[in-house]
Amino acid sequence: MIQKVTGTKELKRFIYFVKDLYKDDPHYIYPLFSILYKELKREVLQNKDYVAILSIDENDVILGRLLYRIEYNPKEERDICYFSYFDCIDSQQVANELFSYMEKDMEQQGVAYSEGSFTPYDPDNRRGILVEGFDSDPIIFTSYNMQYYQKLIENFGYQKRIDTFSIKPIIDENTIKRLQTLGKFFERRFKIDVDYIDFKNMDKEIEDIHQILSAADNEHIYQETPSVDLIRSVAKDLKTFLDKRIIRIARERESGKPIGFCFCLLDYNQVFKLTKGRLDPLKLLFAKKYIHSVRGMMQYVIPEYQGTGVIGYIYHKIFEEFAGMGITDFEAGTMMEGNDKPLHAFDKFGGKISKVYRIYGKELQS
Image (cartoon, rainbow, N blue to C red; front, side, top):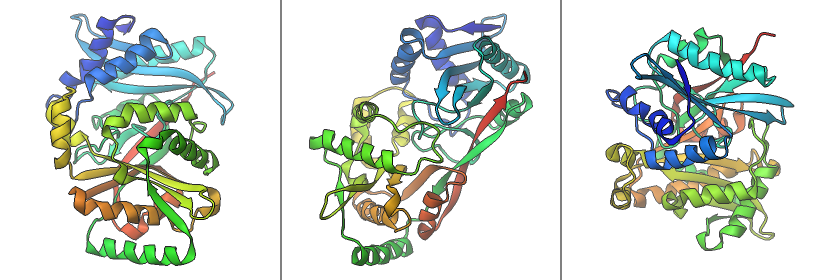
């Protein structure tokens, strides 16, 4: 039976379902439940932008969940139903029940195409169903799910739309030497400064980041460029977790024109795994120094500087901080299949694709 989430009691059951589902999985990391509850309460119950549903058996036991939203995609010039937070037991019947409910809603609203798992308001994080790379913990803001999800989704008629990749470069003396050589070569060719993000002047920094995003090639990005307000909101939400040493903006030395930026984040999943979904400010504060991994969240360059090596140069500056921070692991991603520029930008680091995530799509039969 499908139950639509209409109140706080059902919403809490929706959120905490994963505690039972993944209780025996050594790699799953619980979300910060209090923050997730606040977000979904706003989106599902207050704004009603998203629909959350549960699959429940005759004994009122939750078997699965699904969140979806219908949104106009200007690139495809049509409404699309985006789904996310798909979790369920290993049952094709339960998966079919969840997706059938969503598709019936789509038909009633005249929507012919669905896609996921994908969070429309968060285009660079938690996108795709994990299909390769189940042997390690997920790094912060990436997907992790049961291996059987691929089977359940494909059996319901979904097909691969596109894959995204996480790349795990090798951090060793050879990498550092290559980056130093690259840095010297780049400095001879270009007059570029790479600055720490200035938290005391965030309005200016956000304007520059928005300028870079607006100009950068977004052929492989599904959403429009995020607004200044959205960037400001994300920065505010993440403020506790940001470290200026690993967030850099590149600018032309003479004009001050912003040309690229790289946003990295400490892998707080290493702390969240210990707190088991609880927000514990003291543990976050004291455990931060024990984090040894960083995720490259975003890297963008304006068109005229693409292919010049500026991304490698910015990462050269970031990698110089790693030793003092105790960082020994780095994961870059997630990057869209076919988006060769950022993928090739990491060739000089060595390493390999560590995880593959799949975005699925399905056209409804008319």
